[in-house]
Image 1: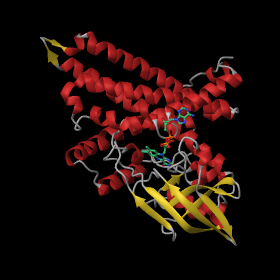
Image 2: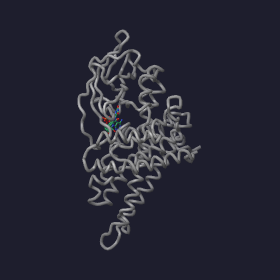
Image 3: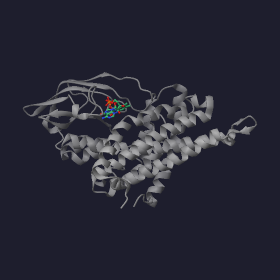
Image 4: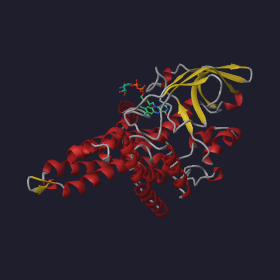
Length: 388
Ligand SMILES: Cc1cc2nc3c(=O)[nH]c(=O)nc-3n(C[C@H](O)[C@H](O)[C@H](O)COP(=O)(O)OP(=O)(O)OC[C@H]3O[C@@H](n4cnc5c(N)ncnc54)[C@H](O)[C@@H]3O)c2cc1C
């Protein structure tokens, strides 16, 4: 099956999330644009209300307090969260750390995953380093065993979290292999060195630089599975969500551009009558649809396909195409809106800035292209297309 229908319960949930975003988030965005900053109490309140509405932790297994939502279902909801600017969608569809849950010990789940599911705090993944981003094989952070402790040294960049996280999931080289460690934020030797500004600010998440200097972590905090595999699974899922959010953003942009083009007059006609405006809009619509099909196809493959290498390829196609599509759609929207498109009070201006990172984080467009070209050299095109 190339793209399955969404089941009725997912459709209803998607509609509810979409209505929530429109009702609760859009007014908040307008206040952020006016102030130029996020009101953290407002953001916390948004997260609480979304949780009460039943949108949080749905990806987690039922025994861990979730609904074990399929990846297809998660992607459908993530699209709705992507309609929000300023990263506020993250507070609406609040996902639990399923990838950590799958590989952590029962005691680690109790201590670190359960509080996240209860909404007490968030986790932050610390993989990237100043010298290792796309190529994580070049990691320099080390963990050296000392009795029943590990001693961490190294530097991590772009460690995304909304405010201080409850736990850092840190990738380091331990005894010649990559391993994940759960590090408490107040562990001696862990220092937040700097919180740089980013193009998408004001944004719900910050991305500080963190330094570990002889930071001691108990043996019980080493995740038993291979760190390499654990990190890859997290990155894979995030790529799909990026694709889905890009589709949600593009939908909002296409609709708002179409509305504006029919209202705005120039030279005696609505600008919608000029092909300079209407044709790019048609391109945006077409590219958005193609991106959605790729994203839903990849999500369905994630749910059912055994060959994980092929799943990775399908996810790369979705991430690559959807993130580049969203960039083009935002650019065309700003142009169609003229000067108003450049005002930050207009969602098009905010998306124009905010969507740029989707071509970079969790693997750049170039990295997706190398995954795909390697895959096609090895397996041919058919498996990636569901062409059998
Ligand atoms: C806002 C933000 C939030 C982030 N959040 C997190 C987080 O929470 N946790 C985390 O661990 N990381 C996070 N990251 C890091 C992110 O995943 C990396 O920035 C990304 O993977 C790229 O790595 P890099 O910045 O080191 O770029 P580099 O790897 O230095 O790449 C530089 C350029 O070279 C290109 N390039 C590299 N290799 C190849 C190749 N083989 N072929 C062709 N071109 C190539 C890249 O595509 C890019 O254009 C975040 C980044 C940002 C900007």
